[in-house]
Length: 235
Image 1 (cartoon, rainbow, N blue to C red):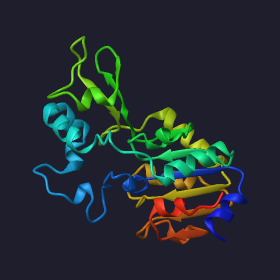
Image 2 (image 1 turned 90 degrees about the vertical axis):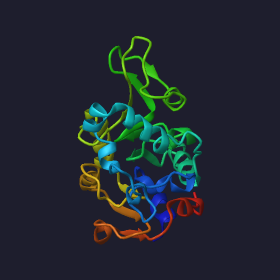
Image 3 (image 1 turned 90 degrees about the horizontal axis):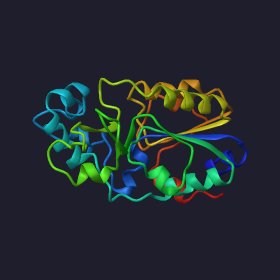
């Protein structure tokens, strides 16, 4: 059984993706050899991207965020495009992603559960007014609303809970799927990694360049680049 055959024999596919889905769009991942978390900073990225650091060192947070977390130039790759096509064809019921880059929506996917939020949604912490990512990217220092409030990205920082409605929707989609494709994730980030446990369908497929804790449970394991796999996928 290959991936194309498995998808063809399924009626409700859910795609669960991590940073490796977007690396071919030029966005670096976090935990690989060249990933963001392997680079040297005065303050570790896990601290820089925490709620406590945001509150205590807001200007330094935005300095790092603008430099490393706003790839507004990135375009969808073959994986994003093919997944959107599968949704239009009625095969893919949902995308559950750990990514915050918005590339699934840019490719045309409509039912996307963004577990860690999105760089494309930003809001004033005082009045709630929304702002696009470009407002953050083009600014300097701490971004301020017209009312004077801080404009905060709607991304889940370390120490913050996941959005309840997003979590519920993602779990329901996974529970109802007869095929789950897990791709581009080391499954080392919790609670997101635990979402796979809600799958009780027929076919579990994994696409990742390195080993994961899920390998032994899968019906199909592809030790390949996510974009390359989907570029060769026959629909």
